[in-house]
Image (cartoon, rainbow, N blue to C red; front, side):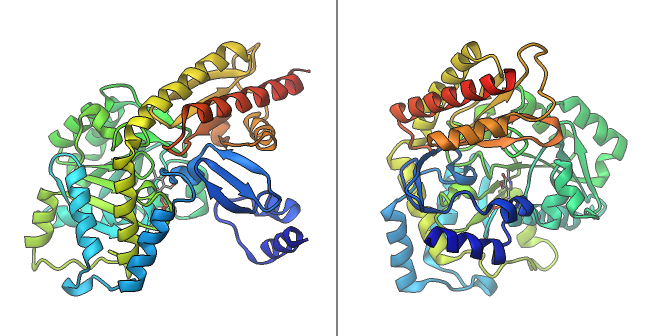
Length: 437
Ligand code: PLP
């Protein structure tokens, strides 16, 4: 009864983000979750699922962490918020900035706070352009991003996003955003030559593309990118919004390649989703320019830049990640998950390529006879079967893809990985029977 009421209210009043609103109107929200614990969520009917996406790749420390609630409560009782404009400050923001500087590699030592990843992206583009202006090169304005990349939904972030359907909704994307193929450093080099390095402010990339289907570049790609950017005086921005905070088995994904960007964008796992927060960690050189250039005034700031309660939660969240060795757990459990995917590839004919690094992975669905995709995506059928059996996964079906993606909380244990794989196997077999009948 309560569920029915909520569904009616949901349909009438709640515009869901990034959703089929038509589907919502016709079917209502399929899950109204009421509780979370570890890697599990329970909905209003009492149905429990192993949540293999950390919600939106962000609940890294898992659900139901009382410690994070207490960190928020303690800070809110003392001082929930004070703005950080005009040199005002607060203790959690200062400590978190110092902590991030300490965690971030190399010369990344200064932090600008936002409320999420899209804001971190727009901030980075503005700062990149402003940096070059301060250096006497105001014509360096173009931002090169990658096809299939995802950077968020503000106008800037949408314009950088290389998944075309998102750009189409913006009707008129912002000027000066260009896209290259996601895996070819040679293509990037060529585009820079064609456009002229003196017109380009920055190159932005996710170390592993998340929303685009967990696309992993080959070893050495980011080292080549770093060299190309250095040779052409182009800033390299790493969007670690998904890959940061242990997701790939390192604290930050570019550590796998020993590459240090000029700016690193963080959100999601920074608080494990317990409260909204994002950050741009920038290099000493950029900080120096911003501080000393013209009159050293920065006309860019959100009301919530440096939110005290959000920063307190982030500090506690990072403490948990370190205390519980979750980066290492991500590496070990990720290897186990990928090995399981490889076994499924042998066992189930509709499983094509599988890939992953740490606790982020993907599985392609293919037609066994042709080894090509089915005419209509099949991954959503697998997802439905899995949900019925107690497993939540996500599918990627834009631009002809037919992919299941995974990013379970970094606390996942060996027996929970086995449960994930078992339900996945049962769901794949059920769907295979149906589509091959
Ligand atoms: N960048 C990446 C790589 C993301 O995956 C996302 C969100 O999924 C964003 C940026 C946008 O972050 P937010 O949704 O917090 O604005």
